[in-house]
Image (tube, rainbow, N blue to C red; front, side):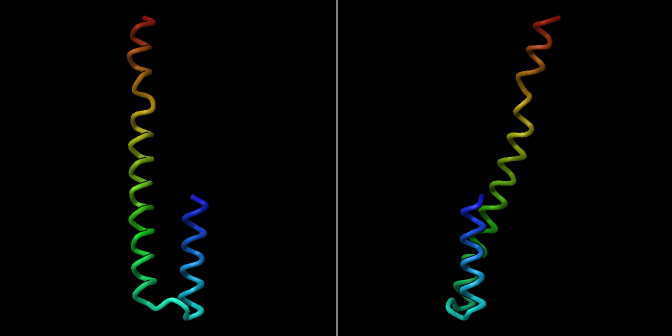
Length: 62
């Protein structure tokens, strides 16, 4: 995650310093936003499935 923030910071800094043109900045920003969305979805999916083993285990204990 830190690596992605570092990339975004460098991209933003380059854009603000006018080293990177607006189109390249928007392209890179779009890629990073898509990666963030994907990671958020993956985290949500993992949080829903991480406790799936508990119910069968609890039933087995009864």
